Image (cartoon, rainbow, N blue to C red):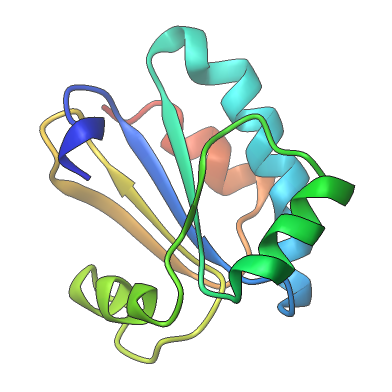
Length: 119
């Protein structure tokens, strides 16, 4: 995550087999498209099998980077406050790398609107 420091980051943990995760991805992609020029970064971390993620992204390409976190991503999520290991899980980090917000469950347009003003 150090390579993302210096700009706000929306970090989203998701999986191809998680319906609310899949449902929110187009909204996260739109947020990225709208806010990238304002310095925002979005990173998706797939807690899934690499082959399933590649097949999924071939059907639904995303403009923001997607990392293959595998099952180790669950540990990273826990270290960021996802104590239950549930998905989707989103963390908003400020430009200084400090956690500004955590959300367990599906992101809403209202969440994104509120987070867009954070730095």
